[in-house]
Image 1 (cartoon, one colour):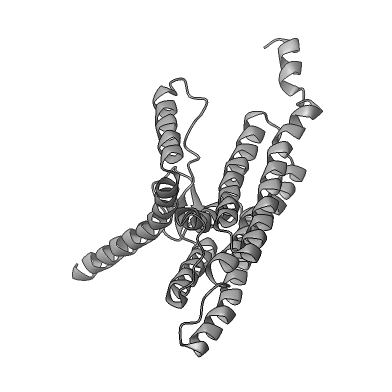
Image 2 (image 1 turned 90 degrees about the horizontal axis):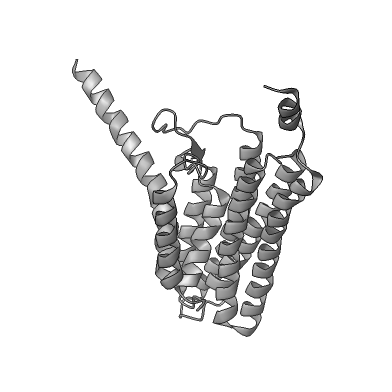
Length: 280
């Protein structure tokens, strides 16, 4: 290896390269702020389109969040500042924004149904559960930031990396996908609102759980033969763009179910192993 080549490899990235991933993080923050404002607007005017725009902004924030980290790794511009900024952005876009949207869209506008006690309980527990979603998301981020090589309670294939607990962008995506599927039309039924809160509580539990979720880190965008991956991504994006309401809901709920099924399959396998050991 020549001296010039060695010096080139050791040369740190230009300062402008560090700004590039931060721009996508700023886009994440902007999308989260827009989602909050649209959720408030939709609640004040009972405007379904505003709720839908809020949900779409959260989904766009997921795209920005995925791009800033990948660009930082590709350009070797990872930094402590970038990690902290990304965490703060995630709290806004995937914690505050979806918890506020979940309450204003699915709890606040419950109409009178002849059960005043149940309605009062729903409104009360709605505040608590949506706040718990925010707390669970913040705890999930804090655990991710301090963990070194975390291992899920139900390990998967050796050599593969998994998220321990559902990532907070995926949790926010589940809420946004449901709102977008309903075209932003808010929930008025007390029973549907109770079901909605059960989903929010379950997503919050998944975020702080130690169950494994697919990370997608084995996807190599720099591989020598990316043709099949590129075609798959184009087809997927096309399907989601054409049928965004159903496509995004299927993706979000499919990811949620995948973590649950992985946990159930592991528990079933462990029971089989213990039963087989007991027969020996």
